[in-house]
Image (cartoon, rainbow, N blue to C red; front, side, top):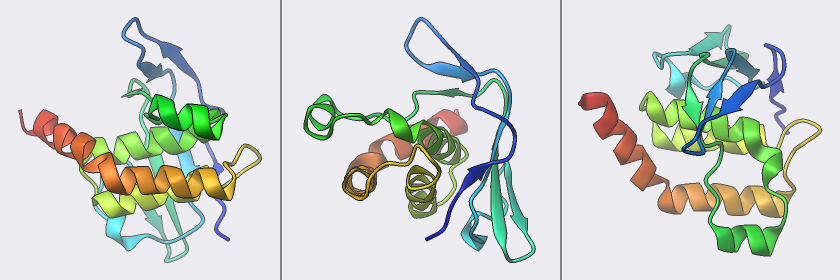
Length: 145
């Protein structure tokens, strides 16, 4: 299985009054897999046909992963996918291919010592595929205005 890892240091953020969080320093994540579909996406570097690095800049605001309350009750602790949510939010904001952004969420959420379990990962990914188009379209409208 592919394993993503942070290459920039720990996630540092501050909470705003509206509940969103702002990164205090940029966050770089090595995905451990080459994803050419992310070529030309701001903050993404393809490394010699072996790796993809996603860098989310300082000052970026994120809500991590938006999980419906019912899912939180059923599945329990979803806080383990914070990094996945940040990378995914960045890729949606930059209008990377939606399927590629959702795949990045899956890779990062299933990696590291704080990874989600297979059921949580699948349900999170399924939720992104089923309902993520709403946020994706909203991000596209933000960018074009």
